[in-house]
Image: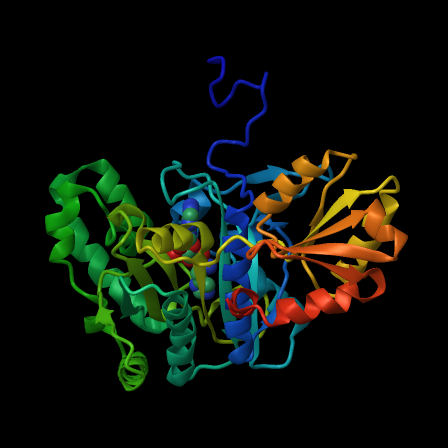
Length: 436
Ligand code: HAM
């Protein structure tokens, strides 16, 4: 164990592949989640919260042949001998909750949650990452697919992102997919006969998984593989065409990528992915999703179609930074209360009053010198510093310093909250903050 290395516990560090989100970075997170919640609300979505861990079997429904389930799951036995896994993705838990509670459909929900995948950490790829996501259960209408895609698309645009593309594909109905798997398996086993045992095993396990391989030796065979569109039945084809027309109607640019298979096995019909050109191509997916019309049944519920997407928060913020998009400025104080009296509880009283009246109020502690407190007030970015001084207290007043102009006035103690509020409300900088 190397001293100072990631496993050196003489000085604790966050586990490899995880990150602490500290202020002022965290203010970008609050802004991003608030913007998503607000937009999801406009589309009629409400928050759902499912457990951070589930019975292992719930996540196994995501697909036995996927890396997410086979290699990356954080699973363990709990003290009661149950097989448990930390959430690697959000949809399985939502489908399980739907099957368990049978809510009225359409069920439109959004979430923000940590996800866990034992991946090789690199920029934009973590072992704990956060997603905001949305799911709709109970509607099999291509117009809904268009709206769900529009929700994600509009969110990226509203943040200010421009350098991203949308790829779409259809995985067909269950029968189409089964037919395609047969055709694809035969083709890959035949044409890839010389590609070795690993290739053969991967094809046997799930030939669709081989389509998005990054292995250069497999590319030629994969590039010429038959495409799913040749296996789509009438229902899936018409559905997919309607989705494309719907996106055109909304002016949402998209390209069809027949090799877009996504990393999870539950997808049927429409799949989609947003990629940022501002990111490295290995981690350029800033969000993705699709239909999963069989998943609720697999969770023991009534047959119910579903569609949704997940957006990686860390990756999205990296993309924003790369595009030079400011998600949020760190918040600054409205008021700083400076204590130049013997009784510090007077500061606590005034600060509490101002906070209750809606002003972001900071203060100094521990009887520091007036000069030192004014320095902190300056650093806080506060618009006004309120000085509780002995002299002013003698005639029940306080001094207020406008930190921009440097002007100082005396205001009666009883009136100071209203006095500050009035001026802060007229401050264009503050108005801007509340609109972000
Ligand atoms: P996913 O494509 O596996 O889909 O993940 C969604 C998004 O989460 C990705 O596009 C990416 O932005 C982010 N992400 C995934 N893995 C990591 C990681 N290791 N580090 C950082 N970011 C990551 C799903 O999870 C599906 N549940 C989406 C969905 C919802 N499909 C239907 N409904």
